[in-house]
Figure 1 (cartoon, rainbow, N blue to C red):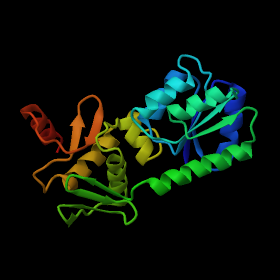
Figure 2 (figure 1 turned 120 degrees about the vertical axis):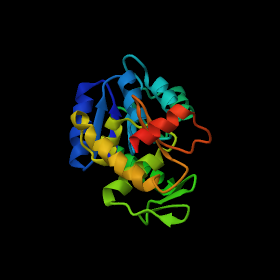
Figure 3 (figure 1 turned 45 degrees about the horizontal axis):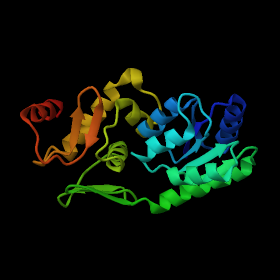
Length: 237
C-alpha cells in the first residue's frame, strides 16, 4: 500500500518512513504544505498522514484543497491536542486524528483500518459511457463487446477509469502503472497509450481516451468536440 507523509520534522519523517517501509508500505514524503498539496492531488495514495503545523501552507489548508478534488483517507498527526483543533480537522474532512507523542503500532493499525474502509467502499465496476471496467473480474467491455487487453493494458485502463474526468500526466501514469519513474523515457507511456487507444477507441465511433496537449491524458465522454480536438485524437491514434 502507498502512503504520503506530510511532515516537517525530520526525525519524525525518518522514523515513520523507516518503520512503514519495514511494514511493506510504499512511502512518499512532503516537507511542507505546498508540496504536500501537490502530491496529494496529483497522485493516488491509500492514506495520507498529515501534520497541522507546516511551512508554506498549514495542514488544514492542505486538507481543504484536497477535499475539493479527492476523498483520499487522511489521518492528522500533530502536537495540537486541543478539542477545537480536533473538531476543525474533522470538519475539514479528516478521517482520523492522532496526537504526538504517539504509538507507532497504533498509527499502523489506524492506517490499515482507513485503507480497508476505503477498499470496501470503492466500487468494483466502473462505467464511462458505454465502457464498463470490472476491477475484480479484470475485464473491460464497450457496447457489450469484450476488449482483448494485456495485463498491463488493463492496469493502465483501470488507472484511467478510476480517475475518469481527471487529466493524468505521463509522470503520474508511470508511477501508478509501472511504479517507477520513466520521466526520461516518456515514449513508454506514449506507446502504451497508443496500443490501448487502438483497442479501446479504434472500433468505436465515440472516443473516450483523449490527449490533452502539454498535460497528459484523460478518459471521459465528450458530447461535443471542435475540429482541432478531432484532428488531435486522429493524429494520436
